[in-house]
Image (tube, rainbow, N blue to C red; front, top):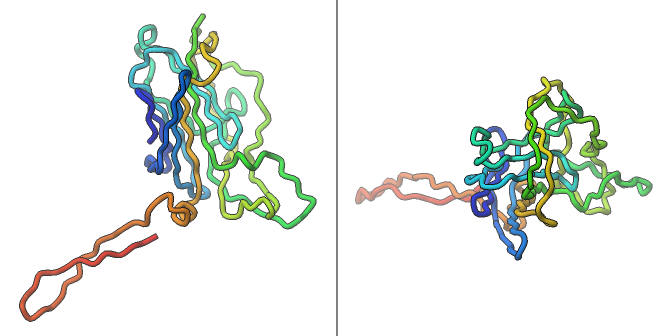
Length: 244
């Protein structure tokens, strides 16, 4: 979990929040950001959660993965909308008003074909970001989702040239498209109050073995009791084993 004042964000896989390692924070006059490392497992779906303990101002949240904007939503201030939730889960991108595709960690395939050209900016792989923007609200209308403009989806299985030196790392792809009922949502009309995000969270993800090799996370230490048979009846001792 990463925290900035009353705001917190975390990534969940199989219902369990991933541990965040080597968290760092930076501050300026206009914005605060924090970052950390999480371990990814190929083939696993994941969700991005964030929580607002105060809800004293309306915030627009933008979730981007590997440099691609995947979700944009608004958390309304509690003073005008006390019944709205203070925690949001984002696990998919919308492909239409009634279809979605989930986020999935995936392995990058490599090729030695010199004519292969990457379709995306691979230098942005391995990063999940959540930006919070303060919003000045003009009007809120409760209605069924209406959205006619959807950006082309480019988080698809990727093949890169081996010279990119991306062997072993993961990226995120979208899962199969599935149908859902059109939700009823708050359609918010407003303007951003700032030129930069009010708060930013950045999760860098890599396979666990890679984080171990880089010293980002420490090996698990498991203590196992070992009984010794001694003539003086000494009590059992413990031996420490390290497991990657």
